[in-house]
Length: 307
Ligand SMILES: NC(=O)c1ccc[n+]([C@@H]2O[C@H](COP(=O)([O-])OP(=O)(O)OC[C@H]3O[C@@H](n4cnc5c(N)ncnc54)[C@H](OP(=O)(O)O)[C@@H]3O)[C@@H](O)[C@H]2O)c1
Image (cartoon, rainbow, N blue to C red; front, side, top):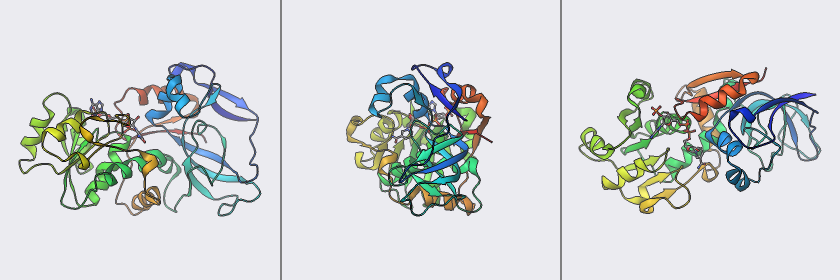
């Protein structure tokens, strides 16, 4: 037997159960990963609490939970190339990542080799947030010399987008609550409070103007950027659905360029980017971890550890 987080009905963190389940095995074209850490994303609790969203991802109850993971390959099915027993890996397994043993299909699921020097807790945070941060900046053609407004800059996607933008030579103004300002400064961003009057506050911080924006929370930052005269094609949003206002660009992790997540992993190993871990919870505390994530006040990433 092995352990897995499951839910049989949609609802809040209280529906999540840690259960003993039969060990899954790798069939043809599959590998089995012994999970060391699983990173959480808002999508995880949104799916487990909203059946209509779950349906969009093809998830029905009973279901496993979580998406991002890191660990080591411990079984390899026939026909798999590029992965061997013992390889350290990280990636994504939608709706089943928070479990001791997870079977993935490398031809379909995201699965990468973990570089030397990257620990499992950090590797487990990268699949969704890394791909999404990269896509959000690529969608606006971010370039050196830009002044970019990042909405929700301290969240899981925001901490990576902020650092990627800074590394690319942009000046970052990031929205956050006032208590988060020092945290954002340490990531290289100039903080600004979200909420009514955002465009005026940004104008005061950047009298020469803002050239691009990415909204990682909703529509407020996108709307402020439009008010500030940023062209819609230089504004992206990851959290406003497929038809955001004002012709700004919707994007998401599925649009990340090949290699985007691996490049972030390499930048972490090289010490150019860091992933602030806002909370690390043992598997038994999955409900506490999800409650914290669902509070929308996370600064960095939340990780669940399995060994
Ligand atoms: N399309 C995709 O592929 C994709 C992928 C990943 C995520 N998403 C979505 O993108 C959003 C962000 O994901 P995430 O993982 O970064 O979330 P997260 O970690 O939960 O974001 C938390 C952050 O949101 C900030 N925040 C709270 N209220 C805010 C407000 N009114 N305006 C601006 N920021 C606010 C908080 O900052 P303070 O505490 O300082 O206020 C906190 O740092 C979520 O809605 C998620 O579902 C979409």
